[in-house]
Image (cartoon, rainbow, N blue to C red; front, side, top):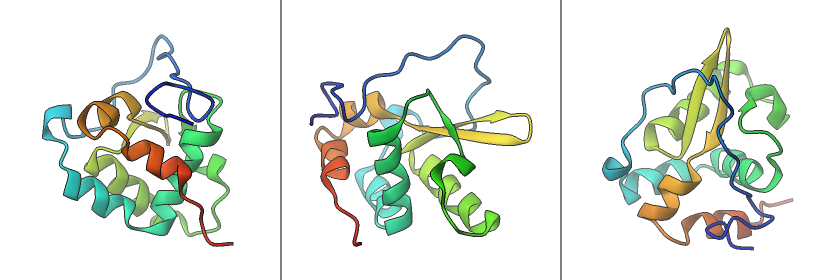
Length: 124
């Protein structure tokens, strides 16, 4: 189940035409392992990234797709932390922000990291 190979875990999804510009995020060369690991250290954020890697059928997803029973302000904080760490990319669609994992960027900087995320098993 290698993320790097683009297998069933997370097939590389091509960018659809006409996407809005991404919200501010670090450049690939500015991604820092300690920052990425800090963002992934929260179980909810780790769950978000894992779900995107294992279950994405479309290019990006709105917050409601995750089915998380948390206040909107809390979710906004978690999605912002992932974006600012460089783990996810977000785009604004009207009033809605949609996210996807920066698979190629993370695999180029930290090979094997996303494989660990997909292999992680949350507590039941």
